[in-house]
Structure formats: C-alpha cells, structure tokens
Image 1 (cartoon, rainbow, N blue to C red):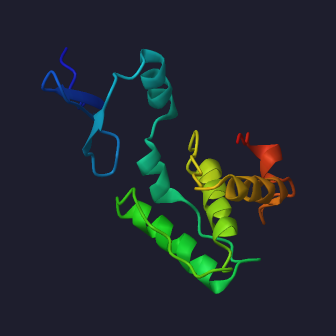
Image 2: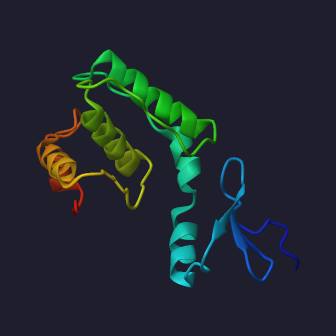
Length: 156
C-alpha cells in the first residue's frame, strides 16, 4: 500500500548548504539549517500535531486589561504579522512606552498559546539585562495570578 500523505519534514542539500521545510506550516518554506534535527526532536514535533507557525494562527484575542494603547497595537500587530506568515517583525516604540512589558507580554503569549519552547531576549548592556530580569520576575499576566518566573524558567 502506498502512502499518499506528503512528507511532513523535507531536507534538501547541495552538499554544502542544507535547507529544511516543515510541511505542516500554513505556507511551508525552506530555511537553512546547519545540522539535521535529532530523530527525538522530529518525533516530538509529530506528536504535537501542528507546527509553531500553525499554532500562531490560532492565538486567542489579546486581553487589553492593564495595557496602554501603544502596547495593544504593538502586540496585536506582531501577532498579525505571525498570522500573515511573516515570522520576523520589528516593534518600534517611544522611550518610556513600556517596551519591556510589551515584550514580556508577547513572550508569555508565545509560550502559553503558541507552545514555544524557548525565547531569546537579547539586550546590549548588562544593565538592561538585569533590568529585564527584574521585570520578568515581577511580571504577572492578566489571566493568571502567578508570576512569569513561577510559570516559566528564566535564565540570564
């Protein structure tokens, strides 16, 4: 009996450059990878049933409670970008507009609703890293009474 289902994961290589495509994505596209994924990783992805980009299509609406208008706009536009299959985005906000709080709210939503496994929060100075860590430790989402660091592991 022949399998009529398309392959969920595809690798293409020139011998120098290797591309990977997750066929479960809403609009599958290849990306360069430097190693083949471990079989255990592929098994975990298959067990989950849907890709991260697919899960980002179904994030519930943002609860506006406790957010400024510019934060609401930033988060909703970021999530719209993901839903339009644009996995890279830039949030630009004015000084003192709550960029870190906005970023943490987006991270929380990606972890909770998108089931993201890890997020890199990159800063350019040690002081900003310490400040971001403090903000993560004090952040309480508006749909849970526990702090971010009680829900998710944070490492600096």
